[in-house]
Amino acid sequence: MNSSAVHRLRLVSAPEGVSFVLLLICSVLKRTTSFDAVPVMGMVHGILFILYAIFWIQAWQAQKWDAKRGVLLFVLSVLPFGGFVAEQMLGREERGELKPAATTA
Image (cartoon, rainbow, N blue to C red; front, top):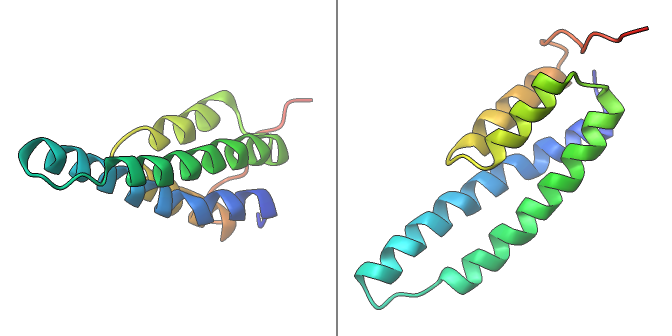
């Protein structure tokens, strides 16, 4: 099912995942060297995370996901490399490879 809400969420998933990993690396570098990019990466990651959260809510409403799927996609956003898994899942959903969410009547 090709939903623009899912597409937007998919587009921000991978960059959010990259920014999270880079923020973790910058945090380690800050404590082990004189390199301190945490303020910059923190801001970039924060903006991408907020976009992810907004697009996640919109996609959940548009796709009428069950609670399990909706919560899983949010939990993936707070795990290192979870954004990449979310991007893969959303890509399969966009291509119609995943079964659509069951609607309750």
